[in-house]
Structures are given as structure tokens and as C-alpha cells.
Image (tube, rainbow, N blue to C red; front, side, top):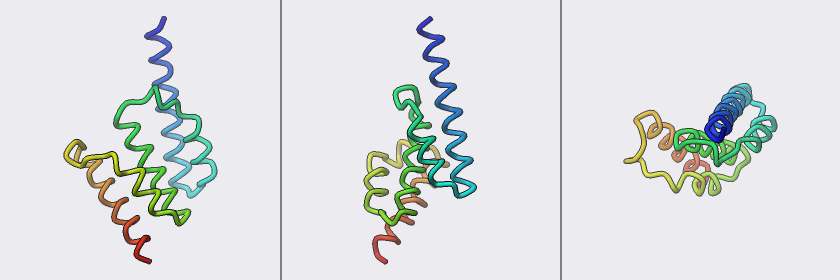
Length: 102
């Protein structure tokens, strides 16, 4: 029974993350933020957590808070990430750094 509960939690988290991505892609920041709040962070794996952190950082940049975006990304070591994750990390950090210099 515990495994079914955990499995269901992971699936639910994955669905919320997919919704978050969809809302972000169409520019609906408020729905993105609301969906992020519904993700049970204890039910997600590292990759999902990374994707959430990147989205939260992008929201912070959009809201002209690039230092918060950098804080959100600071726990991630590029050497521990996949090539896709590294690219996402570097692109988001670069965008945040560019905003801090403006």
C-alpha cells in the first residue's frame, strides 16, 4: 500500500510538472506559479527537482529578480548534470547574470 501511495504521488507530481511546463510555454506565469505550488517536493526525483528550480529561476528573472534566480540555481553542480540539464543551467544562469548587469 505504501508503494502505491508513493507511486501515485510521483505520477501526480509529474503531471503537475507537465502542467507547469505547458503554462510556462504559453506565458501564463500565474498558472505556472500556482501549479508549482501543488507539486509535492518530497515525491519528486532529482531531475524533476532540477526542472522545477530552473522554471522558478526563469520566473524570478521575468519578475526582475535575477539574484533570486541565481540563488535557486546555486545548489546545482554542472558536473553532476546531464548534457541537457547543463545547457539549461548555463542558459538560465547567463540570462540571470545579464539581468543583474542591466
